Image 1 (cartoon, chains in turn red, brown):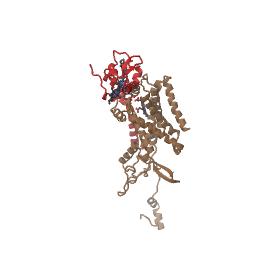
Image 2 (cartoon, rainbow over the protein chains, first blue to last red):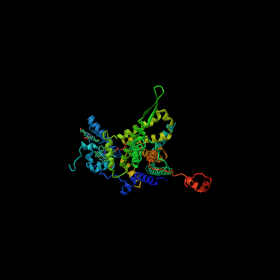
Image 3 (cartoon, rainbow over the protein chains, first blue to last red):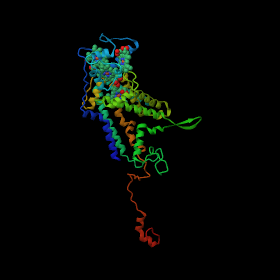
Image 4 (cartoon, rainbow over the protein chains, first blue to last red):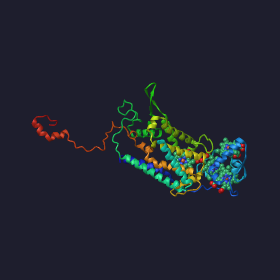
Length: 127
Length: 330
Ligand code: HEM
């Protein structure tokens, strides 16, 4: 092999860079558990099926926003047959009253930071 | 035909992952085994190819790259195109890797107004190539939100820049539009131009279509057919901490995306895509042009037994003297 010094340095750099997630995860002892979110205690079900909420709650909220802001419709009928007001703060956060331990924990885990809270408010603790 | 075969290969990969996870229950195979094997093939393959390249000697520096070589003080040289120092070589390599400098010089030959041969600059290939590669890099870096916990800071920064315009929910990433646009251009370029189509091979179409399929499934998953991203991150963290778990409730679409990425990784070292490593070993890019300052000796020169004139004279000195022939050294 020619220029062995440079080639081997380059290859080691390549291997370390491309396997970095493995070493970082092993070193920090990450385990693959779901983020520890606080689910509502009194309520039993969400505004739609849990599996749907896990993957697609942003679609639902977005739909609500369109309906409220553009069509002035505020009533939502859940698949389970209940009626809710379509509101981020008043509905979602009435059951999931602790945003920091529900929405945020999950969002931090997958690094999303919705900008909605620039305008929308979250209920204060103990209000 | 070549396009058809490439399309077929990508479609079969998609169908394989789809059937395997939607009705075959092979989540472990597609979520853990294939990605792990693919990563191994990728790393091993790249090292193997680089070592093989490094075993061919490159004895002489290529002096005829673009730009004037450094020679006399009063001749202006171009230190980046034709560098004579290591620093210059690093500069040239960096410009090549980050900005595709040599592709910027791409020209197009055309017959104009009744057979006049004209060379013009052709920047679209450079532009689309640059856009594609940069988008790809940004997307892969953004994906680190699935690979590390806590998510590294740069992911947030990239997401904010990439989603700067805050269109829709989830926020539209510019890089997604750009990568699909650039890839479509690169693909149709090969189909529309007859000369290019003539020289294009399966190994040109297949990687393009494969990456288009990866980006398309990713975009589909982000904006249209959502899946549980928390479960996706669990799967990835399990893989990367070498204690794989397979969470339920990840859609087949995700497994298609992941399998296509696995195919890409496994195929990478065996294809033209190794230019990722190869660029660093290109003799026109990585050798300083100092042949006027330093003597380069070919390492594979066979040892030649020489007999110099002086030695010859010494050998026959007496005879030459006897014959009255003049000598170099009396
Ligand atoms: C060659 C590497 C890859 C490329 C080019 C790629 C490309 C893409 C693209 C263009 C998107 C659209 C959304 C975005 O830009 O973030 C996407 C989304 C996604 N990718 Fe990849 N991907 C790659 C590897 C992976 C891997 C290894 C995983 C495994 C975790 C993965 C999982 C996902 C998921 C879960 C989404 C949906 C993200 C969301 O809903 O926000 N991708 N991918």
